[in-house]
Length: 135
Image (tube, rainbow, N blue to C red; front, side):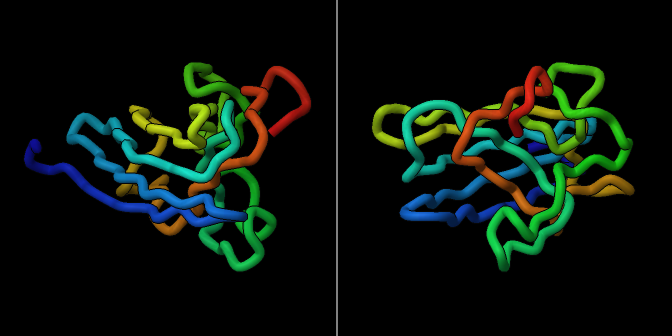
C-alpha cells in the first residue's frame, strides 16, 4: 500500500441476520476504496449509503439523512449532482451475500468532509439513484 493511505473498518449489523464488515482505504490521490462482504440480505438490489450521523441506537431512523456536506440533490454515484453519501446499490446474490468493491472520491477518511464517525447503511430496498421517489 502506498504511503499516506488512511484506513477504517465498519462492522455491519442489522435486522434479522444481516452481518458484515467493510474496509475503507483512502489512497493518496483522494479516492476511497470500499471492500467487504455483507450476508443475510434478501437477494437483489439494496441501497448503500453513508448517513450524516453515526447514531445507530434506533436503526436507520437515528442515522439522519444521507451525508450531504455540499447540499446537492440525491443521485447516482456517477452523477455530478449527488449527495456525497450516495453510493448506489449493492447486489446480494441468491445466497443473500453481497460482495462490495466501490471506489469513490466523495467519501474521504480525513479532512473537512470525512465520513469517519458516520453510519454506513444498507437498505432493505433498492436506491432509485435520484430518478424516482425511492431512497
